Image (tube, rainbow, N blue to C red; front, side, top):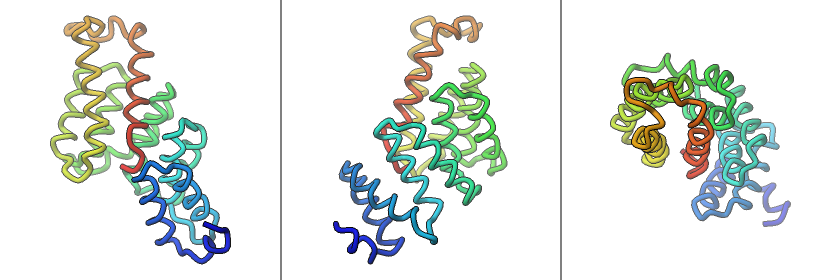
Length: 199
């Protein structure tokens, strides 16, 4: 698509084209549409979020974080953006920032799946694996609108189960071998984050 043709498209059209390209795993085209969308005066927060998700797909994590932060600056009420940004910070090993980003999710209704997912991730960064798994599973049970996100959260639950089965998380003293499992946990978090891009 030429620059002159791109200029004729409005925000709704750019978003539709970006989502279609992403659905076809055409990350380059999706990024092109989204970069055009955010360059305009009427740019939307969701466009920054989706661009960040596309960057995460190609492992450009610094850019992913930057775009998601811009999305939250434009609209702090976007809970899904907050969850994904917190997950990305946690996957990168920056737990303190992740905790700050995730904290407002606890203001959502008690049975909101995003609140439960946020709580699960917060417990995970504290090495409270039983509570983390419990909250993540509760969120999965209540989330009937975003199957892809459930898949990502289930991967984290499965990794906790795997580490426990290997004896790296003793049932009676879960923090005993945290240092040995930290890198594995960060790896599974990052894998979960990048498995899909438009939750």
